[in-house]
Image 1 (cartoon, rainbow, N blue to C red):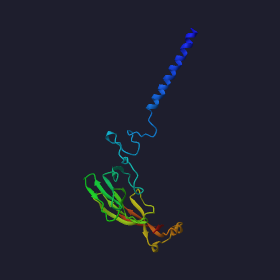
Image 2 (cartoon, rainbow, N blue to C red):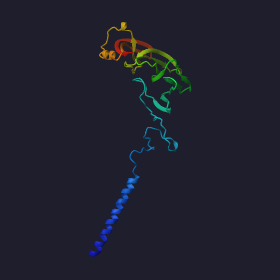
Image 3 (cartoon, rainbow, N blue to C red):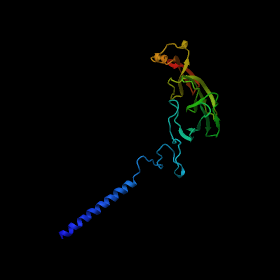
Image 4 (cartoon, rainbow, N blue to C red):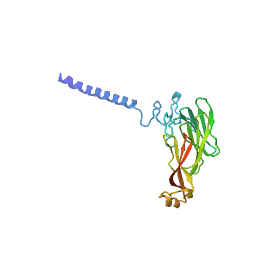
Length: 237
């Protein structure tokens, strides 16, 4: 009896080893290879299209932070690599990057009427966000001082309600009560109290001058303008 058991044990050991080897191979083959990206879950920066095709367009976002601080958060949708839309309540802003010149082509689509409104373009324009049915458009390419234009969309039309120069380096934002806060470039003679300019010498070494900005507040609700006795210094070419 003992002799039969001794002869049977090596066979059992061999069978167990073969079973473990087969299980290990099966688990290895079923695991995804390192570095591969699943198209089903959309990871990899593109959209999954029909037939398993993946585009290079950015993912759609239902709520994205864009524009001047305090602006409304729109939905985002890319139509082509150079055309995308920001979707707000009641309207959409389509932004097309220009190939032949600087700036963007801006179109506004009103949902209630289906109207298509194109933002006038005389100089390079850039979309800077929207708030309270107003859109903000940046004009120009100068690094220190450009213009900001505010359009009103409340009546389903594109009505320009405000336009002014503003300091790009100054703090610009939209307050909760509908105030558009920015710094407007002013001549040195209008600066009641000169602010501290700790970077003035650094700017001079880079060949830049020093300019001044005054705090302006445009009220989008009442269309009023307030100038505060608050000044900053900014670099200028």
